[in-house]
Image (cartoon, rainbow, N blue to C red; front, side, top):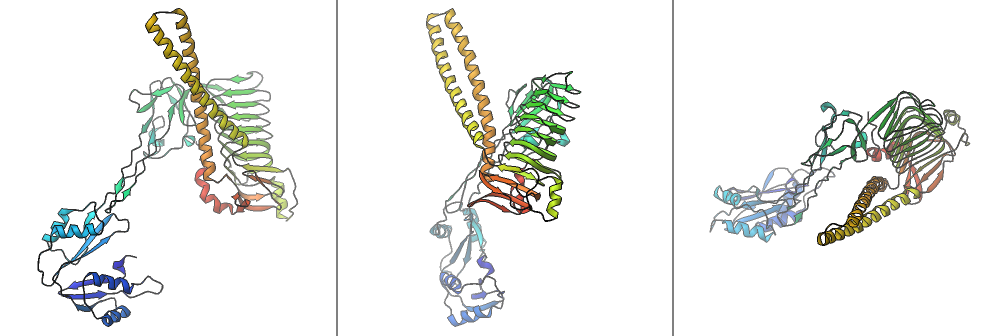
Length: 552
């Protein structure tokens, strides 16, 4: 509590007055030694018994303490807690021998280590106007100015649908497939600003942090404009977002995929209005399916969306997957998975988070692994949940395994990508050295057909190494994001808001826990002694921000 709220010393017409507010039970009180120290600083002679009487009375009014007689000015200097400001309270003597000068005030400030931001103009004004008995601001430091983060303006979206300027946008939550024309501006990126350091009035440095640049890059069929301020489309098509890049892809629309169409492989976006039949496969940059998928194969560099279910399907998804139901499937997802209703007897691996949205949804049987977070309503078939109501805690139904944490295979893949990228960069440097050598030789000896042919081969090889290094580094950056989230979540957590069947196997950071009895509302995370569990609702408050929202 500020000192002024605990007691107040005032000098009025040569009298020293002391006010101590009424003391509330349990509240902070004025300290006698603080009052005495200030009176000593003011060079005030007083009767101790009179001070004690006022201190104990705590009337809340200004009480007379003593007469004030001195020939010198008293300067009371007070600093704010953060040392950003200094205030001076000038108490004049009854009979001043000499006027107070600017030099005396500055010297008093420097004696208190106040060396920065002293305002001579303010001090001169205080002295000229004889502003006494009240603290006045005479020195001020410079506040640190924090840098502002960069942000994107998504011009390919309708103006009403764009996030507000200054908003940090998660590209995975942005709707795509908008039609764009060649030359159209897609994104404008506002550059982050540098921070400006400040200082206190005592000369301490106040460090400012710079804003973070927003990362969105041109992908296929897009490029920066000459000024580097916008990403524009180089071909007509539809917008597609993948990791931190924006591309424009060609679109192929099919009614269905079956024996009449055969396998579908398209270097762009495939939209299938109906179903994908057994023994068929679909490969594309992104896949959108309006029906269901049987015992088929889906492989996408980016996102996969299935309006109905996957049944017996093998899926490889380079970004995020959204499906209504998953049954007896084998699914590998680089980032996030969203399921509406249920997952039965399936093996699912997703790099970051898994969410099951329906309040009555469930996971039963199989294995479900996520790099960071799992959130589901129930574990076990609905019939098993009914058994739990009858207080039968014996394990029944298919066993379900839930696991969070960066897998060893994932770590190995991350290290391999880093190794490949480094090797490609070293190879590129060797190519460039050899190219420079040949160019120097050509300058000296003139045209040489054999050397020109070698130069062309090296150029092709260098381009391949550039592409390889760039691709591996981009993939590794995606892993970096997953690893960062893994650290923030202490290795991951599993949230089950409804019922958990007895026998469910929980794995967090390769620590195992077998649920002994059917229970409800549990969050499983990692603690000092292995897996710990707490209320799902309580822990979810801390991790809610890391679950991304499904774009429309």
